[in-house]
Length: 420
Image (cartoon, rainbow, N blue to C red; front, side, top):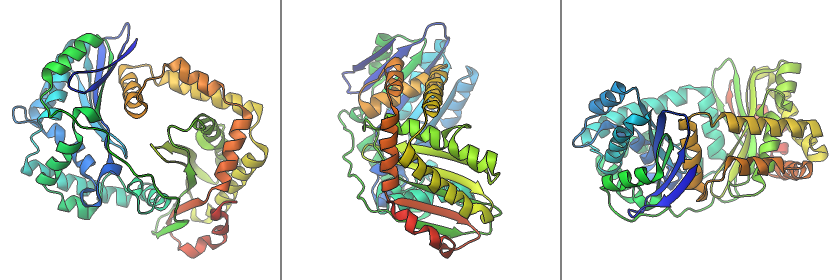
C-alpha cells in the first residue's frame, strides 16, 4: 500500500508497505540538482553528495560506515540534473538506525573545510577519469551541444575550475538554500508503517523550516549541430539525437514505445541492423531523458572509425522509415510487453520500490499505481508512435563524436542535422 502525507515540518513523505519482506529502504530526495546551480558554483550538488556521508559533529564517517556494516546495511547517494538523493537500505529491524543516520547528515552535516579539501581532490580525479573515458566524454559534449549555454547542458560533476574554486562557505550556502524541508521528499519502502515513519521523521527534524522548489528557466531552442573531439582511439564513439518531450508531456508514453523499437532492446531495429545483420558495432542503443521542461532522445554507438559513415546512414534511414511508415503491430506488441516486464521486474525489491515512489512524488507530485502506468503504456497506438517519429525527424539534430578524425569527416552529414 502506498501512502503520502505532508509532515508539520514541511517534508513530503511517501511510503510503500511491502508484505513478506524483512528489509526497508529509506531516501531523502532533494529537489535540486546541477541545473539549479549558478555558473560560479557548478558542481555544488555533486560535492554535497560526497560530503554529507563524511559525518556530522557527533558521528564520524568511519562511525557511520561501521554502524551500517555491523547490521549489513548500505548507504549511497547520487546526483542528477534536477535532484540529489541520499539513501540507506537495511533490515527493517534496524530502521531506526537508518533514520538516525540520514536525518543527522541531512539536518546537521559537518561540512568541515578539511573534508571539503579532501573531497575536492577526489572529485577532480573523478572529472579526469571521465575525461579519459571516450564514452563519457562524447555524452558530455553531446549534452552541452544539445543545450548550449544552459545548465541542462552542464555535467553534474562541474568543471575543474569551479570545483577548485568551491570553498566550505560556498557549499554551506548552497546547502542552506536548497536543503530545506519544502524542497524535500522522503520515501520509504519495505517492512514499515507510514504513521510510525512520519512520527520518527518529525522527532528527528532539526533543520531550518521553509524552503521551496527552485525556479527554473527552460532552455532556448538553439542547439549546436556538430561537435567532434579528436582522440587517437581505436574505436569511434558517437551520440546522435535531438530534443524531445518533457516528463509532463502526454506524448512521453508513445516516445517510450518508439524508443524501444528504435534501439531500446535486443530486437530493436538498430541493434538488429547495425550489430546482428551488419556486424558494424558491438554496442548500439537509444535512450531518452525527460526533464521538467525539456527532453531528449539519443542514439549511442561505439564502432570502428571506418564504419561511422555507414552506421550514421542506418540511423538516419531508420528514423526516416519510422516517420514515413511507423511501426508494425508486432513491434508495438513487443515494445509494450518489454516495458511492462521491465517495470514489474524492477519493483521486486524494497530499494527499487523506494526509488520509484520517491522520484514520482518529487517530480510529479503524486505516485501513480503500477497498474495505472501500465494502462497508459498499453493505451499507446501506432498512430501516436508515428506522430512522435515525425516530430523527431522534423527536429534539428545534434551529433557528437570522439575518435581519430576532425569535423570535416562529417561534412556530408551536416545537412541531415538540420532536420526536415
